[in-house]
Image 1 (cartoon, rainbow, N blue to C red):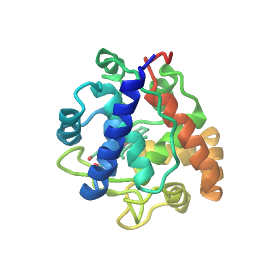
Image 2: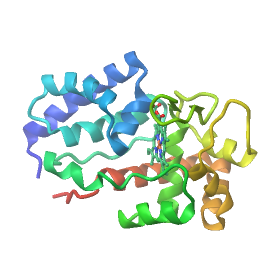
Image 3: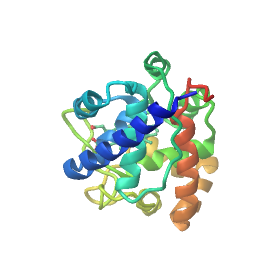
Image 4: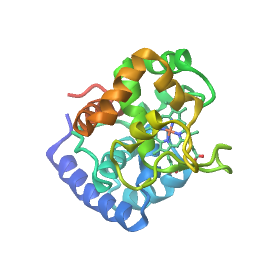
Length: 213
Ligand code: HEM
């Protein structure tokens, strides 16, 4: 169980992260850090780590992801601290391949104990940010306002190809697969349902390999 001093330190780090993410407009990369790790985001988190050395990196990454959502207008996500740094490794090597189909997505996410509903809700993370040719070989944002968290990712998915907007193979399968599609349709229609499910799924993802007290 995280002690009271630790929890107080987390609250201070949360404020520092909020200031950092707002001033640097780096919410997308922070979210991605929480999901899969990122060297660029790491250097920003190091600044915060230097001020709060007691907080584990694993907690800081996940806190950065939660704050990134709040700053861009997304849902509040319940944050339970207490990750140990050795616990971030289990996810490594299990990242999805953007060129593959529905069965690959299910392989990767089911192994983590996540469902079809989680897969679709979490893919909504692509509401924020963009792909960079020098990093992944893909290019462009998924939505017209990549610094605002809303349900536009799903609206664009249903609309089909749209100039200047990116759709990975793993994004397109969400519309093609009937089980996934149900949730795409729901979230495109009902932003509140998306926010609610996103918050639940993000919490699940952020607590993998971490048994809360
Ligand atoms: C960016 C693939 C799931 C959040 C990207 C990029 C790729 C990718 C190829 C572009 C990277 C670059 O060029 O900079 C995938 C695949 C997924 C997946 C195949 C499987 C479903 C997720 C999830 C989240 C997420 C679950 C978060 C909940 C992001 C964000 C960016 C991003 C925020 C933008 C980063 C930036 O603007 O620098 N993803 N992703 N992705 N991904 Fe995913």
